[in-house]
Length: 171
Image (cartoon, rainbow, N blue to C red):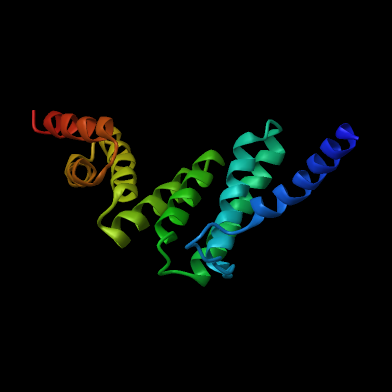
């Protein structure tokens, strides 16, 4: 009898606990889901980019990079003023570099540098462009971009390399 009572009490307790666990904590209100098509489109493009990076088959990797490029471009066309627009330019530039299209890679980096002027991705784009110009011995153009990279990059190593490269230009 005691065993039957204990089993019944345990069963009742197990039925009540999940209901209590699902209750909202006091003071918190449930926030309704809100559609965010801009963010959805950007994240879809990012997923395609990541899928391409993870792909071992070169043809599939290149095809997936092409898909990511189109998705980032679609995002930029639909939401040119979105906070992730600069990121979409940067990811597109990286896709073109991975496809071996250096001129389009540089064109996208240039669009970032001329279109935004401030921010860590501006610093990253400026640094990469400056390195290309430095190698081509276009010192004056490289100098301006190294200065921008030194002031805008969030990567300490890139800032230091920018300052070092500036000093080499002036030697």
